[in-house]
Image (cartoon, rainbow, N blue to C red; front, side, top):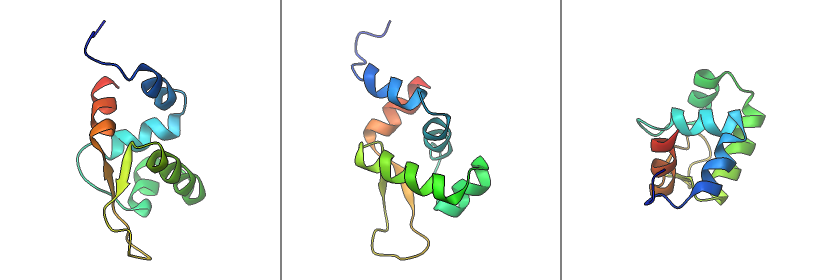
Length: 87
C-alpha cells in the first residue's frame, strides 16, 4: 500500500460511479466542455451536468470559465489529479 496517499475514501467515492470515474479520466489530459464529455463518454448531457456539479462541489474538478453560459471548460484540481493517478 502507498503510505503517502491519504485520500482512500475519496478514491472509493470515484470508483463507486462509472460516470465519475470516466469523467475524471477524460479530463486527465486537458480541459473539456460538457459537450466534449458527452461525445467522449457516451453519457447523456443531463448525467454529465449532474456529475460535473457533484465533482466540482467535492473538489475533484473546477470550471475554468465560470462566466460563460456556453462552452464552459472543466479541468482537474490537484485532488482530481491525485485521484486519477490511482485509477
